[in-house]
Amino acid sequence: MNHDPLAEFLRNDAIARFLRYVQVDTRSDDASEACPSTPGQRDLGRLLAGELVEMGLDPVELDADGYVYVTVPASAGAVGPAITFCAHMDTSPSESGAGVRPVLHENYPGGPIRFVDNPDLVLTPEMSPELLRFLGDTIITASGETLLGADDKAGLAAIMTALAALCRFADLPRPELRVVFTPDEEIGRGADHIDIKRLGTYGYTVDGGVIGELEAECFDAHKVVLNFIGRNIHPGTAKGKMINAAAIAARFVADLPERETPEQTEGREGFWHLTELDGNEGRARAVMILRDFDAAKNVVRIEALRRQVRDFQNSYPGLRIDMTATDQYRNMAEVLDRHPKVTAMAEKAMIAAGIDVIRKPIRGGTDGARLSFMGMPCPNLFAGGLMFHSKTEWIPATALEKSAETILHLCRLWAES
Image (tube, rainbow, N blue to C red; front, side, top):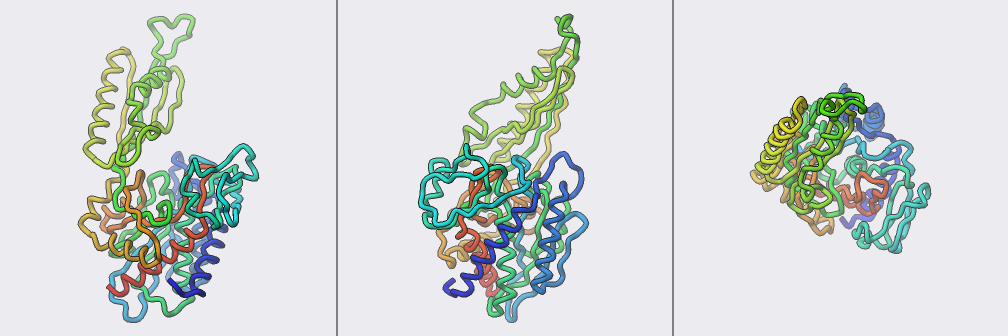
């Protein structure tokens, strides 16, 4: 996009919004039954809704479950279907999101990046080779005590900046837009209470990684919870009587194939991933997620766990293991392969923005996976951040600008389709 005032607006506005949004603590909480699971997400929802109203958009709604909806009417002469852009407000529970202090490392020269609040922490090109793509750019990190929150506040900033540009620059074409911001995506609940009737014919989540990523395939995902019920006896008289639930749970997990863990897999390889293990002699609990691009392989993993449960109960008479397996989301390629135009439009938009397209499967999931199966085909666009869910999370400022620009090109392409 060669319109200098627009390019300047996109960069400055997206950076300002991003820096503002990351300072709101929106870490989600899987232990909470509320929706949203944490009050900070509603705080950010109020902020976003207020900014949308300030743009002059109507209707804007922050609903009872913490979802933010806004509809933008089509520009004159637009002929395409209604389109949705979606990003999530929560950040990962893996690291603190309280008191995020964003730091701008201007004119990045290469080499290590240090963190002002954590002198022992360092980010290097060896850890994240993508840094070398952005020499001379402004690299944004947190200060070293928290995650940054680019996942997915970069997506929020890009969508909000694109909407602000559509309001400010009257000559930018667009179809009808039905935008939604969701809570609790990081804990798998982002689409639980969404009103699909309020969304468009097609959609895009803005929740991917480095500039150029376009994802139309994701993991098939399951969550497994194992509750071990043993028997506690005083250790001095425990021989032949104690059934140590915590020790048995540890052995159970240790028996899983180590080479099929996230630490040892990449590309299209699936895995088992232990996310929680705690307990005592009487009771213990193990929580894991199963991921694979081939749904049949996850079925095999679940059956292997059931066999292992039976084997352990036979080996430890009196032990009980209660196992539950829950579907979390499915591989969105099952839907998107039937709607190739949606992804093709995203490729055209990135090319128009001067971006090299990187087609890759998501080793994870987005709200788009569930929305696709709810009736709105929804691939995932880059938001620009890297090293998500960690204290070394970072994003180049250019990514925020280019993400917003890609959204505007998509609006033009769909308006003309």
